[in-house]
Length: 390
Image 1 (cartoon, rainbow, N blue to C red):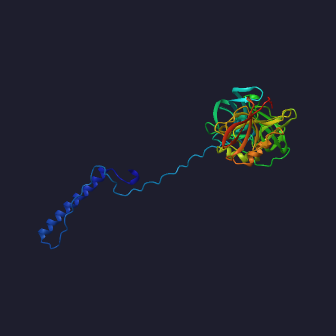
Image 2 (image 1 turned 135 degrees about the horizontal axis):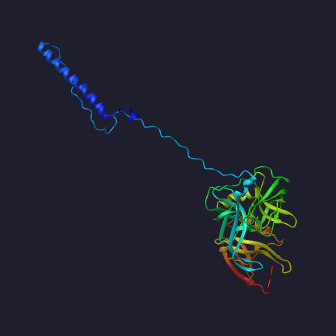
């Protein structure tokens, strides 16, 4: 009311009424006088008093300009980026994977648990770890910084050959690590971060980069090139970050030899080539097995031992199962050097949907089966007459 200049109705109405009545009386007196004097002048008609309503009007008589709405900026989401070595713990995770698999020496293992490490790269809970930490798991449990109760997580995508996996932790608003954008050179200080030996206590070990590019072939992965360093890695460090003194990620730890003091991390360049695809839900250079290269020179047997199979994968659809040995892929004998190099090179040469001929030794029964990935299931072609052990 005050902002539009509108005064109280009762006062405003009384003022209008008094003025009108005075004009009416004056006009009547003048008319009588002129009539009495015989004046010829024309007398204007008397003004009729107008009453102002005493109730509040339904509309304000003068236009009121509505004030412009005030634009309140939305609060900018806080991005909790790790920027120091001291804070790295907050974005490093311990992962417990529980599942069933077939061990080469012990046979069927049910509801077994193993622990590894990883690190968060996005506040929404996107995290990086090793494929061998999570593949074959029925349940993932994650501890942030090794503290608090466990969070559930789901696997978004894996790469058997690059030994990388991306998982999505329930919740959001997490602190996260960024990739180092400087030059990685021999002699640069680095730190291994993670939770070795299944210990819930966060651990950092210090070292330097020994080689920026070295051979990355193992019996469980085939990485184009890796970083060699001497920041100690123990079992349970797998999947954790290798970081600079500023807390920036140089690589993803995945292997080591305590006997020689040589430890290895998947390089930043190698990781970044596949992480976006994994994050989008795609598997890269994978058929869906948790596999290890095996070789028995005396028996002339080599191949990829299948510990477990991912449901819905090409391997699962072809009816591979834990305890199988993939001896040939596209007619090529696998693991003759004890590594997954040939197996992974074949996968890198083809698209995920390509039809690939596969031959398998079903170790438990001695059957040899053949089939085609992305085409038809395995079927027996012969049976081994003698027991063979890898």
